[in-house]
Length: 525
Image 1 (spheres, rainbow, N blue to C red):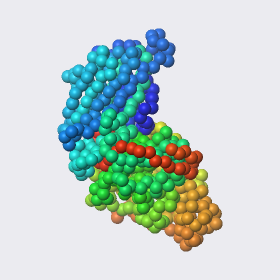
Image 2 (image 1 turned 180 degrees about the vertical axis):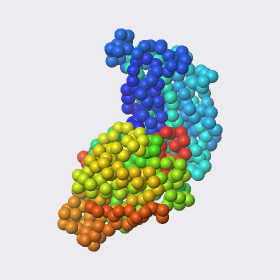
Image 3 (image 1 turned 135 degrees about the vertical axis):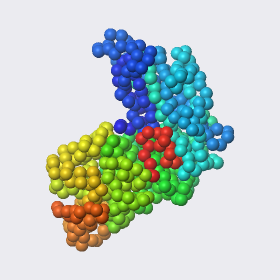
Image 4 (image 1 turned 90 degrees about the vertical axis):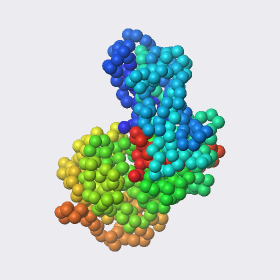
């Protein structure tokens, strides 16, 4: 699924009655004809266009507006629509309405149908639908947002829109905080409450830190972005990215530590520290680049790729030690119940951390295997880079790995570890973990590439590679057989940048369950 940037237009298909999907973290669907009722055939699909002006577009703007209520325990979300004259019919579905704690607060210019659509009256120039959504004060129990005395964090629920028009429909979406309300909203996430904002532009990409915690310091995170943009971004550049830093204590941040929606994510204030290679900041950064990576029996790839590359990129940016990096990747059983898991069978890892932990371990070994089989010409990043859609299933991912490597046998290698509960050895040769040879993660004045050429360890200052002579640790499950060893505001150009300061209005803490309302929100469970 392609990440959708708020306020960016997206072409959605053919003339006639089409369906637009505006959902947190999900790109609008390709237009389809509704054949279920009177909406069918209002305007025919034209080849070459015999009605309307060729190339004419009907641009619909949906504005999500969020506000806190006078009584704690809920927020109000209003969807307002600006419609061009070329749109003659509109109906909207808000799928979460009717779930526990979610009710219709009001409508203007809409009527509710017996099929739970909101049907536009065709006359009101700016029709609106308001929804009241329950929130709680606990990350552990909240499912739609979190609210404290002086702040709240909310995720915008999805809507489904159908229109009638003879023009080419386009949709523009935005998410804002209500007039007079302190806060900041972007990319389907909103923080309501006092905050400061800090803006930095690195490598042509603007990042806004929404600091709900007055003591939060984004300096280390900014340094990571200075290294990452242009080096670790898989060739994906965003116009902007937003980081909501919520005022949660370290204890409150577990087990949910962060969540990403499109080009925005939230973390607790401790998430800015990047004091270990398991940094949630680096993990969520990868999500903003790769979005949803796999579907069906490849669904594990989404968290596995963020976990592996989050650790790899943080480590290459100078975070952590070599031993701690390897320890973070190495795994045998998976929290909370330490069961074995088969990555392509979600039932074996549902409710565990296996798609993070085993997934990252397998991808680390696969990355090394690709490098070894191609003599360093290719890496696992070549499998992910340049993709605009997720892998539809495991077979699609496997085929891409074989294509990049040019070796059919690697498919068999991958099958063993993705389709059974076996684990591959985790390679410990440091050359397999160099993400960019121009960096100097150990800070000894020599780049990783130069150190490898000189026979030195690129991650341990002053160490020679022969001191860690291509050792490999087998970490298979007890039932697995012995596995073969590793044989073989201010803007600056990247990679430097400067940051500026700007007054703001609000930061928030959010919880895992925001994902219940926002398809595409990934979270650390």
